[in-house]
Image (cartoon, rainbow, N blue to C red; front, top):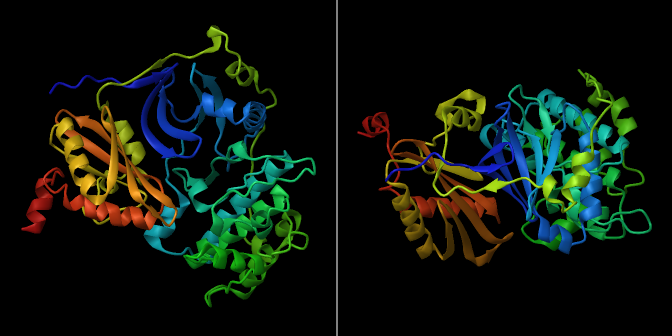
Length: 440
């Protein structure tokens, strides 16, 4: 089967694999064909944006995010639109999620956790000073660059579907329950700044403990624990760290520690380096208005791919942490996080058919489009239906990489699904010769 080297294209950007999916948006890896720079593109559906009367809010959020240039916040470069989509072009951060560090290596040492927490507070403080609140801070939104520096993603953009009422307080319960402040769950209105700080406290606890301070499979029991700030610090926390975390995880937002108080705290100040960066004074916001003008001159053109997207060596390296290609293709099918990959020498059509054959007996509905598939579990799990996305990429002639990614639902349920799926894919997965020798 001959496969043409075609990719999706949006304006000057060559668009590749999907990096993540949310309720309103999908994030894609892309490359600027003029400069060769890698970027991430957040794709929003125009129709949904108009239907939910979010235009003014999106314009405001995007304009603010363009003005925010901080070393610990993912940079927003530009915004474009086609007839049906809005594209937000963001900095591509290649070091993976901070959460993966905990999953792979367990809890962090106190001084390492403090360094990340200092960067987190620097970024949160800077954004709050400009009236921007995150409202969904959690380890999955904390990325690391190649130098191990923290970068917060979705700052300001996570609030796209939130509403501020006349009392100036936010009223939508959002965010991941385990990281959400008691006043957010209460729905009596809350201040975005103090709510963000609570989430920062939960993140610090997770970094140092390796587990959540508030966790329970029963949602009501979990909420009760959060309301009362019912948690215990493990014995390995230093006394000063315990006191500090208790000040942040104060269920009363009025007495909760503030950022100026955090900056003066002895535990926090140890080895603290204030961020050094230069703010650009002239930021052009013309593209933000142009996105919502329907005049043809401002619309970018989209070209769709009809074959598996080809992937070159540069993209392979960019997907692999620390430029180590050994981490890229998991040798053991049991090793799986929120996404996993395997290689195959089978023809692309056959790979897609085998995936479908393996998923259907597990009770999954399958939708296919070109070389991408969406699978939805028929049973309702802990976090709704499990949704899985797969895509086939051409790495070299007759060698393909298959990415299997959790698009929605519970991560542990995804692990279980993948384990069952992989038993039906034994003939498809390519074993390198050294792997075969190792086994024999």
